[in-house]
Each structure stands twice: as C-alpha cells, then as structure tokens.
Amino acid sequence: MLVSLAIVALLMGILLPSLGRMREIARQAVCASNNRQIGLGVHMFADANSEYLPTSQFLDPNSPYSGGRSLGAQQRSMVMLRFRTMPHVGTGRGQLSHWDGLGKLFAERFLPASAVFYCPSHRGEHPLERYADEFDLAGVPEIFANYQYRGQGPDGQRRLHQLSSNVALVADAMAGEAFFNHAAGFNVLSADGSVSWFADVGGSLATQLAETATAVNDNSVREAWGRFDGHGLGAP
Image 1 (cartoon, rainbow, N blue to C red):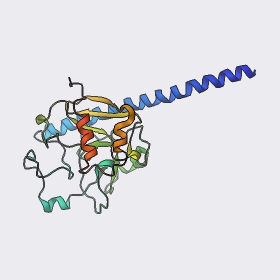
Image 2: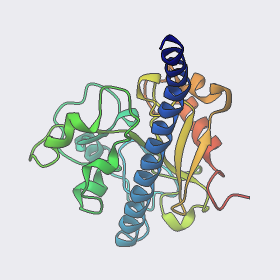
Image 3: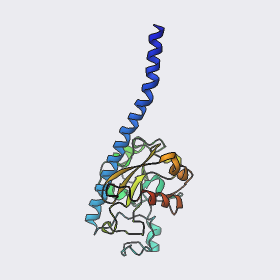
Image 4: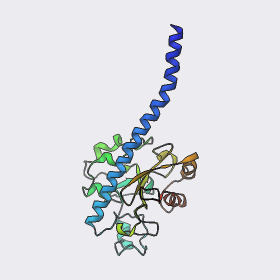
C-alpha cells in the first residue's frame, strides 16, 4: 500500500505541472481568439470610418498622418476616457464621459461582448468578473481591459490602408508586471488581422517592461511595439 501511495504521489507530482501548462495553453488560445475578434472589430470600424483606426486621446495630435481627425486643444481637454485599457492611461482622471481606443468598438456595437476585452490568464486586479455587471450600466465611470491598443502605425499612420500587414496594433498588456497576462510571452494582433505568439525568450521583454508605469510616451513600450512588428503571419 505504501509503495502504491508513493507511486500515486510521484505521478501526481509529474502530472500536475503538465496540467497547469495545458490550462495556460488553453487560456492563451482563448486570448488569441479575443485578439482576432478585436481585429475584426478594428477592421469593421475602419470600414465605417474612411479607413481610420479608433481614435485615442493618447496619440500624437500633430502626426502628419492624422488626416485632420485629431481634436483641437480645447476639445482634447474635454475628452476623457471611459473605457480604460489598463496600461494605456495616466492617473487622476476626473469626470469620464467619452469612450477611447478599443472602447469605441464596444460603445459603437462593433464588439458588444464584454468578455472579448479580457484575457482569461490575467492575474491582476482587473478580471472580467470584476466589471461584467457594469458593462450594461449607464454612466459607468470607467471600465478596464486587459489588452493594449497602439492606435497608429510606427510612423504615426492613422488609416488602416497605410499600414503594412505585419504592423502590430493590439497586444497583451505591457505596463507593469502586475498587468502581464502570460508568463512566457504576448499575443499580438497585426494590421492584417492575424494573431501571433511573441515568445519572450529569457523574459528579456518582461524585465524591460516590469517597471513601466504607463504606456503614454514610454520608450520601453515603444520599443516593444517595434519588436512585435513583423511577427504576424504575413511576416517573412
């Protein structure tokens, strides 16, 4: 009996880590599916808005590719974030009235399912369960998401047709270790709608981003987007 128990314990010790890895692989697959659906939403939004990507108050209004769509200084001061993508915001926001970035896909019914904006592997303070009931409430001050929105190409391009097919547009959250979704890499959505897995070999990218407080004008995040570019299915 003792020998049998020892064998069972040994098998459990061998199998449990494997089961944990399988669960994470399954969650990564769901996360990749979320990214693909977000990609469809971005393309539908662009089709309905003269090829422009969803706007964000965090993009450079002076970009030569803005196409005159950027708000004036007074208007920008009035536009506050309602859909908060965790690593894509600053702090101290007050009255929140407008949707921003990926939130426009939800508000304008391109992606009405709230679960699409939440990675099942997220280990931080903002899982879907915390906000699921609030998506249907009017006047909700802020709602988080687990994905990071770039909102433009590497040279400030704001129209979808201006982007190379393998330019990264959406990825797992990057601003700070508490917001990382996966331990070994990032799911990345490219402009052509494909989703690829960026393996963070040795954890070098996670180490670089671990102390990042915000995605606004942060060199580490900009460098990460540069590393993600070219990893789509259309990449050589």
